[in-house]
Length: 88
Image (spheres, rainbow, N blue to C red):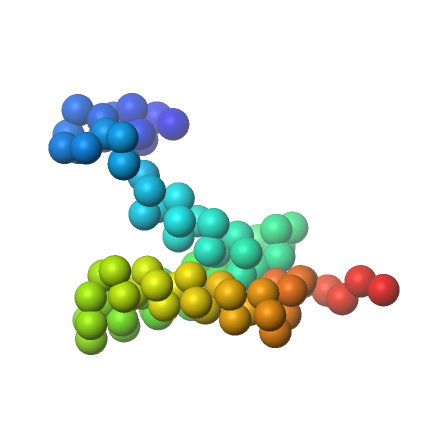
């Protein structure tokens, strides 16, 4: 909240401020198990690598789409997250 308040005078469009950061945080949360700090760090590194790689090759919008696609793939393959445990 404090970072948003400090960025408000600098940002040209305050109504969309934080949208990309919020989307990346949501993708990291879904990739990792919500109760796992190690999973969140691993998911953040993986997402950061994927977004940087795709931005270098293509475009930032495509990189965001690939990040959301990665989230969907993890949800299909491992719904409990990368570091989550199976519940019986």
